Length: 201
Image 1: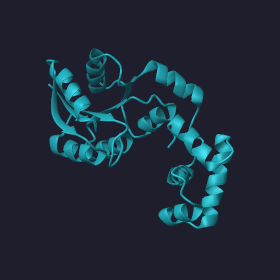
Image 2: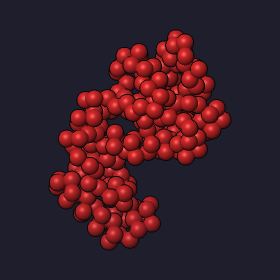
Image 3: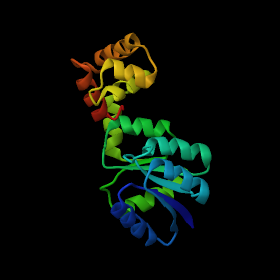
């Protein structure tokens, strides 16, 4: 029996996924979570074979939870489920140790098959998303540039960003300038939007 953890912040979607997976004779849902942090805690408690993680969750997204689960329960395979087919998300998911990356609107049978395949040691990636990720190329932003862009995405001032990230205002300006140049836009708001669209933030 393959033991599965489900992490999805929308209760109705989580319930539907649990019901669908429960119809499979060789799968059993051993834990559920609504946030990234809760997913890691439930994984530690239940020791699942596979963790199905939504990307967009509060209190630590699915990518952060994936890295946490892989560190705490090394034998657990991670499957990322998302409604957002952004190329940068796929790259970040693979970096976090995910074994599979699937779009949520696929057939339920495909999800069950993917769970079995990752347990068998395979990697499963939505083909259209894999093609998009290859054509988009790697994330050009450094981790610090991503932090600064993300901190300023809500329109925060340079001083606010500097205080939040414990950097000097000059350093924040340098990171923003570099990020704007790499993304090829006119200002930091456009840079943050473009980076978010690509899944780089």
